[in-house]
Length: 317
Image (cartoon, rainbow, N blue to C red; front, side, top):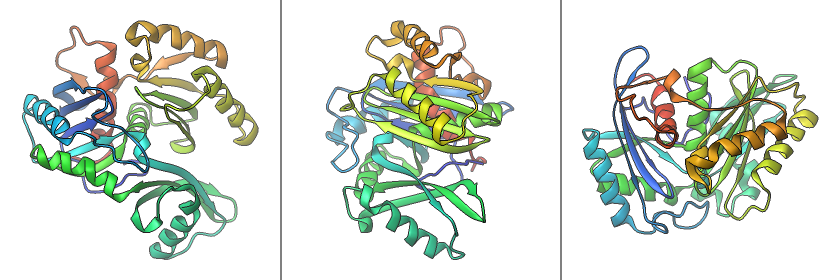
């Protein structure tokens, strides 16, 4: 069962697709324990075709994206209904804390919308809001993980799927499903840090006993280096979150850095020096098996990880 917010909540299909700034991908998950990756496909996108953003149009050339999505879907055998992974930049993620939680769901939804409204560059009436339980607060309160997206921007991604012949019955953010992948792998005990490197953004998450307690997203206009960003996060963790040390530090998408796969190891060592802790690559192979194990590259594993994450978090449809 997923512990993180999602934009829709029906049972998962067996095919997932991702539409990212630089690529589209698709994956079909089979049965078994662990489940098998029966088919997968990744296709690059030209620059400027998809522009992930919180308040501006994201799908800048629908025809190109639709055609690429149709090709990767054909390579995994097609589907009527898919799980869709979208870039983190599509939604504003907040951790909202209440000392007292309203008993009625409608009241809670209204209070959450009121709390996040000032951080959104669009009206709350235009917002697609999703939330899930965060850490409990002394005295009966609760923190909530809230994801807010502009409804018409989510619809842009859905329309591309419809044009490619599929319905996106489940839509979620990339980093949420990397977290879900790790939870499926280890159960999520203790405190651990995830650094997600996409082609055009960085997202950092801290999870404590299976619950998200920190989330920070930096887009392409950020000034801090990755090492500085991670260091700031570690200091906040110690000072404000009563952190006693990370049990694991995980990196996903390291091959998306400016030097590609060749620079991933150098980046990992740089983070180890800054944190004073071992840094590992998030590996989907502890959760799902690949039928074509020979020649599986690090960048392919990075591309497939969020797709596995969204498909293993819920019971199959």
